[in-house]
Amino acid sequence: MRKGILIGLIFLFLACNQKKDVVAESQQDPEVEKKEINNPIITDVFTADPAAIVHKDTVYLYAGHDEAPNDFHFYKMNEWLVFSSTNMVDWESHPVPLKVSDFEWAKADAWAAQVIERNGKFYWYITTEHATIPGKSIGVAVADSPVGPFEDAIGEALITNDMTKATDISWDDIDPTVFIDDDGQAYLFWGNTACYYAKLKDNMIELDGEIKSIDLPHFTEAPYIHKKGDWYYLSYAYQFPEKTAYAMSKSLEGPWEYKGILNELAGNTNTNHQAILEYKGKDYFIYHTGGIQPNGGSFRRSVCIDELFYNQDGTLKRVVMTSEGIQK
Image (cartoon, rainbow, N blue to C red):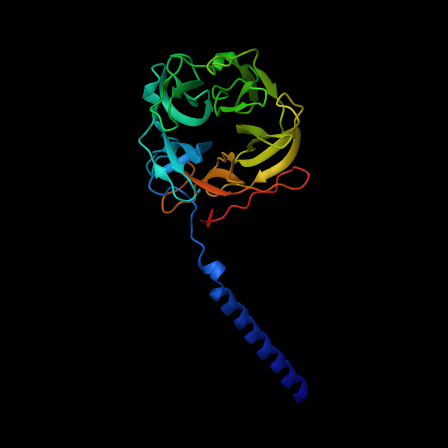
């Protein structure tokens, strides 16, 4: 009996010392020690609904500005912001390039938006509340520089709530995303509870044909188009509170095949809004959370970035959201 107890104590002693060695080794691991906390990427203002482009080897990040005070429980957004970076870690803030008040026909809400370049001009598709037509609308601003200043491109809304009938809600015309296909044809996607799309004329400020819709499982909002190789990817906010799901197709006209969840619930916020970007040979998933301390939440969000990875068959690996984010 004593011999058995003695052997047990020896094994316990060895196990404890082995655990100490593992802990000590991890604490001294230089790879662990040198990692910085880089998410959220912007910490002096609240930012939401990210979109991004690459222009002349620089990434330009566009976001809405969450301005709601800590005791205010809805969105307060009056302007859009722009930041730039050449390493995805250090971000330069530029003067406010666009506000709701820059659209004479609009009255409130600087909701989700996206910028795209064509023929040396930058077109910013925005969501806002129309002053005379009930419901949300989509407008277009234009500039000669990715940081603006931007101005209303057409003097009226491009999409208004009376133009879409797939759902009866007044906020289905939100979250525009634009993609220019390899043949030069531009497409506008948008929607809430219904995913709409339409072709754009070469001038980027007029529709070119009818508005169509896509049937996607549990589509909520925030459609985003990107292409990798021969595949088109349509990612979107899924259910509510929102995860991000995605579908794949060989054509922007479909058919789209649902592939599953891409990003889980995004930390202390009901919404999940993404942009996907390739830069200097790496792929990035840009999103927002409500996790910034001390006052982050659904109406005080912050943009984060993590790497995005593909499987050999072209499907997407699920995003791993991290505090460390992108490292230099």
